[in-house]
Amino acid sequence: MYLKIACWRRSTPLHHDTTASREASSRATLPAPWLSIIVPTLNEAATIANTLRRLRELPDSEVETIIVDGGSKDDTVSRAIPLASRLIQSAPGRATQMNAGARASRGEQLLFLHADTRLPPHAELLIGKALSGSRCWGRFDVSLAGKHKLLPLIASAMNLRSRLSGIATGDQALFMTRKAFEAVGGFPDQPLMEDIEMSKRLGRLSLPVCLKQRVISSGRRWDQAGAWATIRLMWRLRWRYWRGESAATLAKEYRHVR
Image (cartoon, rainbow, N blue to C red; front, side, top):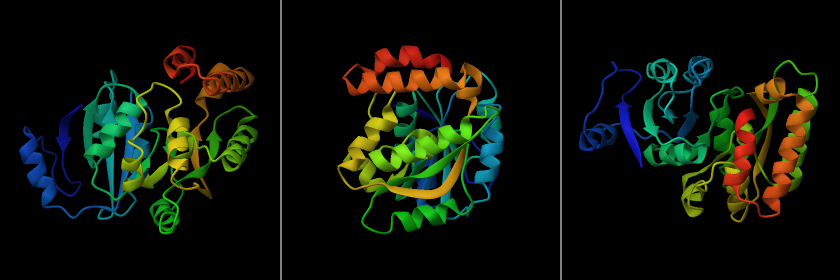
């Protein structure tokens, strides 16, 4: 369940709706976008405004941007409201927030974007072409922005691993058709590895489209915790998850670098 706190069009002054029926009536009069970009946030005041300013360069009539905030204690909400198509609140947890955003969205194609990730030029056209054939989901290649010298190598390894395994990570900006999202029941209700589990579910429907164009994601995990320490932690957690350990248990070890 989520609580709506704002709904508006970018071309009109900001207003706050107070009832679900009023929101539904307002949305029904608007032409539906074909791409919904869903951005889960939690204390992302440092990055959210820049991310949304770049997203506003996309065609307003074709793309909507939905911020799903999980209870930020900083200025994330106040900075996002003037720049997003809509902002809603939900319980914290990336999977929970992304599912809430998908339920609130109207596009036939869905893109799940981290708050610190930048899309390549004409991303909406790339996604539209990628999903126009028989495949119903995909992701971009990724570059990692940061100070550590190993970040380019880490990004290249992530991209290669994804191509070989058919598994995508959230840093690579997962996209899919609404039909595919609904067919697999959305993201699994778990605090970690939701992107891996979602890839497995979607992989039963089709192979992923692995776009060579790159999103640019923050390398802060590797910068803050150390590249080698983070690499070892990530591989250890993936191995234990593959062996059947619960995501809830693994999340306790990952929380300090997420």
